[in-house]
Image (cartoon, rainbow, N blue to C red; front, side, top):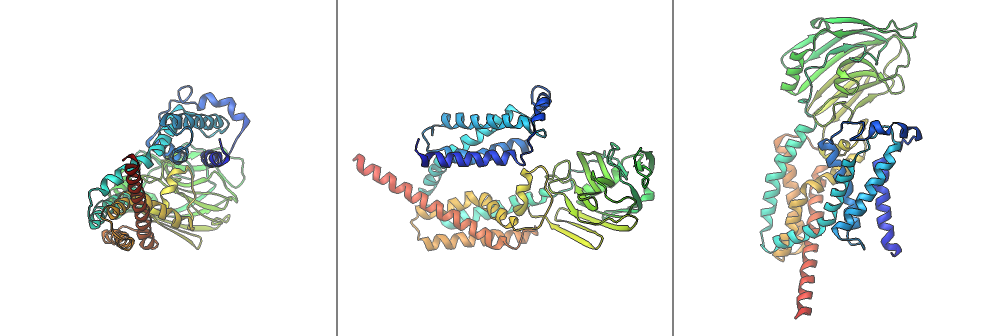
Length: 452
């Protein structure tokens, strides 16, 4: 095999493997407990929808790269992809936080096969569409009619509080399991929804005591005798919650994070947790949302250096489907939820929210993916009607602007950059699609001439 053929395959394969193994926390001792982490042996494990989709998507790029190689047949691509997936699972033997599963190998192989057939299938579909000579405006209308409700639904579901459970007890100073003790005092606590306001006196607490090796901490924490179903019901019904806490840490650095207020079942299942952790003085906030995971860590929030021993701190958390607002110790954090910027965090297990430039790049990728079918149709229709490049560009730009405008009319939040990124995404895909269809048509014409 020639070097130019080997290098792209090797580079793409290595990149995918490294990303899947991230953050590379290998341990030789993890192999001792691999039976407890192997699906079908020690772990009663069936893959969830998120894991299955992630494993398929992760290998689609490899399928695109493997296509056209000496093993380009679908069975050859599947065999190579399965071999790579097996190697990945073998490496996860030494990753203590991972489950070794044959399901992953299966879905990785499916993803590679999809990637291998996508170019051929897409080319045939676009060529067939180009033969209909459909007007350009029809693709634009179709894009607006489908993309607007689709994104509106995605945006609403992305940060919805509908996933909150009514069965989680309320704790002050610890987790339900009693292993995340916080050394301090909660001086006041207020929960607020549209219809009602709750204070600490509205809950019936049972006093719990833990043995802790500290002179500053008496090990006392409080657990609500009964879960607050009325509170959770109204939060789910209204889609918003406000929580204000005045807390005073009695000990310096605290880790865990140590739970100040927690509405949760265990350290991996929570509706909301306000805690002290990070570097020991930081405020940590985790909120369960429909797509944020049961642990509320995709993403979670941190305000640095909030707690000083003996000094009261006011903590305010306001959350709804549009935004999360947190303030404490003179600091303020505002996260305006935008699925176009943040969709990639769904693929990560634990992510601390940060406002950075990654959001712009991820937003462009999101709009390319969401608008891909309709942008491709615009390019194919342009090629079929033999329209000029100028008309294709104008249609692409106007379609992107119209989609952005229709979303703004519906009232959903999207970042300021999308007014530029959406037209650019449509334009880019439309031009590529137009050139692909015209190139395919020239190839077919050349073949017919030579056959005659």
